[in-house]
Length: 619
Image (cartoon, rainbow, N blue to C red):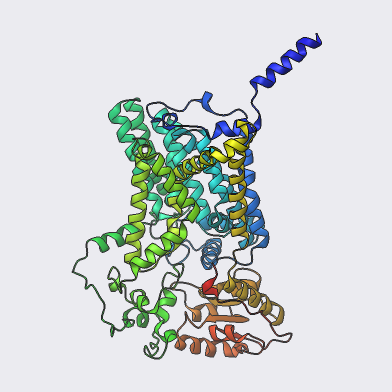
């Protein structure tokens, strides 16, 4: 009896490969293992055992570094405070074009922030927690759609690369739209690769709802219609599935967005004067740029003066600041009232913001350099190398009918960002983030090729006792890349943010009787920490003078770089009857030069901020 048990144990040992042997098999593959998934759909029997545990591990693996970033974070990006302002406006019930819908339009992210705040979370804390969770959940749809286009091994590596990407880890805990957009883009691709093969109605309904949420988060998600449209056409022509079911499903998908917008306008927004159709102004802007009414000059004369009378005088009737004295005076109230969510641009380019007629007209030849610089900085060097390896080794895969629409989508994303850069004359690396989600399968293939190559290196073959130990170098690469990227993420710091957070806390502790803080859009971070919550902020058309009358402030913080000298002086006069005067004592000289602080004199200690290296040299 014992001999039989022993034989069974030995047999089981022979049949069940060791962990290292499994790892070696994981990285052993060839071109034939990744066929056209429309011809050879992915089957359940191809997925790994205990797949649910794999997915749980991926989620936790992605969540851990994000929670670490949350614990060490000090402040958030400038745009975060803008979204908080919009969410706060929504909470006050102002759903008009002049209120919460002025710039973003019908956007779901401020609604999420508002919901989290009503649950008892602070504005920043709620946004950070949401970002950490929703970005960690993104590994699940990434795994799902990559598995169905390639196989589960590539999907596991793709999810791993997303989980450790240092920039995505850092942005994940920022209260901005991007983490939500990443999840929705990945979920859309998951529904899409299943819907065109399985043609189930519920998949197309999910596809339509996801598309609606995605385009109401970031406008470039309109481009997601391209890959699903291409997949529909190829499946329809090849007749591999029921054409009637496929066409009906596409009609259902495309109908969801207008139906949901109609329902929102008839219910939630029924009392508003104008209908909200979503954020469509990008189409109008691109049309104006691509088909200008009259030929635009290639270069704006260096002596051109910004036209500000039409945009400023009718609004508040102020006198424009002297345009020749300094950089500060060139940035007038026009830039204070424009789309503040867009980062500041150089002074010469700011002429475009002050005169909308100059949109689409190149100011200088630096746009190409800015575009390429932002594109390169957004792509991690190691991941870019892995992407290149994957494309070179699996070049034929790129043009398979099931993968080709992703390449087309990639090109269109690049073109759309380029057009926006030329139209608005500014660039942000976050515009390129969606490129990662269409390149990650080939990054994963490149990583697998590299691991296999290292494991097959002659020295490893000669020195390692058994073939199964060839997997050790692959595990070493996984560990090395994880530690390298986690270190990159955890050591990132922003000197300007840290200094402003410290300053805001100092104002909170040393200015007595501060209940209401009033800020312009360039000093919201300081105002948030000075008040301990979202301050009263002047964005877009909202005038400081109106806010002063509406909510008399105890503290006013103005950015000297964003607010004209005239407006600084006018605000000083308006708040003087409230007992607020410019203060400088105890404030570091660098901050005193950048911000005008109107308050009652501080009564406690002086703020001491350690000297930091130049912020321009720090990521």
